[in-house]
Image 1 (cartoon, rainbow, N blue to C red):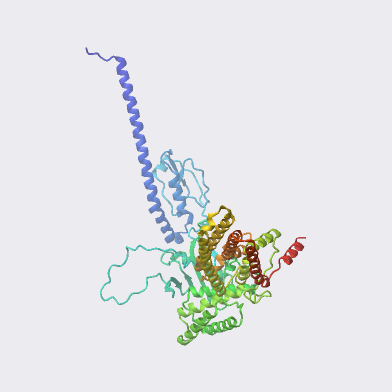
Image 2: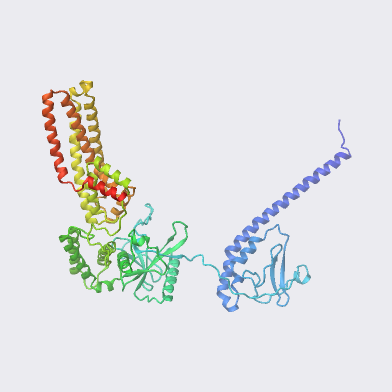
Length: 637
């Protein structure tokens, strides 16, 4: 049976169709809005990429002729307009100056900007005819006066902050530049006989250091840098011009002045910086136009007060500069630089021969080799030294200038011997003194002997290469001999424990315990000797700077240098305790298994041997326990 729809059903269908149509219209409007938003984003990107640079180029070309303010064509107003406007806005109006016929764009809902503001969009290039829409009254016309303003001060985002640094901080040896092993030239064309240097921008030259490093030089501005000029040409030129202009404003004659630049980022803030220093070839110094912190310059040297003292470390930095950039050094070679260095080497050689506490940074054998090099350079070079010779001479001059600074040369407190301290020392606390004295007894005086040797090398937290090497040679020989003695004692202890009579009777507990302790001490002495010998091989032949870092780390404790002295005395102390425990074990076995007569005879002989052992120890002592205790008690009161 067919049912016919009634009036109610027709009305329901109409409502449903109306609702569906409304939803479709809303959907179409939404799609249109999204499409318009997407189109607006593309137009915005196109304007930022093409329109704004075109306006900037137009302003640079014709801005001077038309007397157009910078704000009229700056990128900020255009970007502001494109970023503020949205399709959801109901519209915008064009404001015009009726007297001049100039139109300006105004957005609804945006605060009114004064006409004399630096970011005003309106600009008067030429009279613009009124649009028909404006004449018909469809667009709101308002009178607005326009005033030209001076260009705003725009910060230069490419400007780097100038930071002073020293020549030894040039990041040449710390660079970690990698290349792809699969890339490279696969073939060479026939008949190629010339291989020119890489192409560089105008006025820049590429130089190769005698060690192989690549650096760049600008002859006109006398600028050196390790930074790749091809990648940072504008930054290098701008920084060099700024620093040279600042130097000239301070009435500094740049005729014999060189400038070194290094571009990078601040390690903490990530700020782009330009590190620099100036080098004076006449005074043999480096200087800066900003305040420099002396922490890196002095490198831990305390008590520097006089400028005459600072002069030596500044000179060492200048020679470091010459060593890094040895080209174009004809002036230095013509002033008798080779003869000056030869005199320094001769005096240092005589000092090493006649003194056991020479302050020379080189040993006798090294000085002889250096003198041979100087004589060879004098014979082979002409009046002017090349980059290779300058690099060698500057390196040796740097070492001797640095030694003068470390030893306070020219000061009233100048160090005249390698083991002479020039600083006041605080009195040791009574608790630390008692602990040190106990350790001296437990280690049989080994820390005291090691402390004497250490203080001959480690003076005022500084050392020299020859004394450090001699010190480590002595330690190495000592630990090798202790290793041999420990191996022999370990064999004796194990053989003693293998005797059947030692483990047969439970009454021999003292003997067994003492033998076990002797074995443990000997093994400890052997292990510590091997570890220290390996450490000695690693740091025994390093430079003085590396030795200073190593010793600073080893003495950085509450006991300071005494902790290192105790560590060096451990192999000897453990070996001695191993011998004592073995003596106790052997004596216990002897006295328990013999008659009274034999015990008396053995006891007398043992007492005589003990006295003979103590005799050389007592006669060669250089300290007195009771006198030391009386002095400490008097100081504590």
